Image (cartoon, rainbow, N blue to C red; front, side):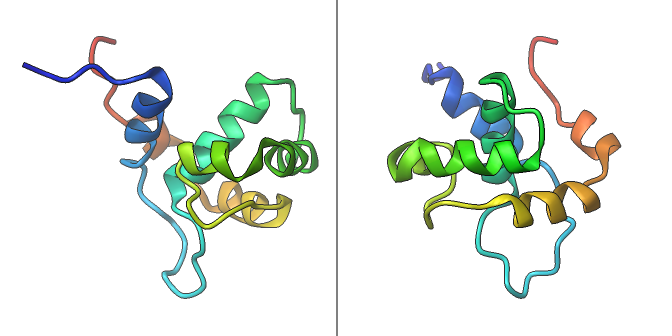
Amino acid sequence: MSTPVSRREYLVELLRQVPDPRKRRGVRHAVGGLIAVAVCAVLAGARGFTAIGEWAQDAGVVWLARLGLARGSVDESPLRRLFARLDADLLDAVPVPGL
């Protein structure tokens, strides 16, 4: 029997499967957490990296930790660098049960 989880936890679990294109040195936040923050910010109306960074600053450390960013807030530059390197096909390939 599987244990039910919230949609937020499910989103974070799915995004943890995305391969991280960054070099290990200097990585402060997990790739899944950064993508989860970006998804939530866009759903809340953010239309660019600056707006996503502002949303993350406003979200607070508790919500960021719930989204997988245990080390605190993030600004636009790590998000911009990640999405410049992220392979969209690999993101699309994350298996979503039931779809």
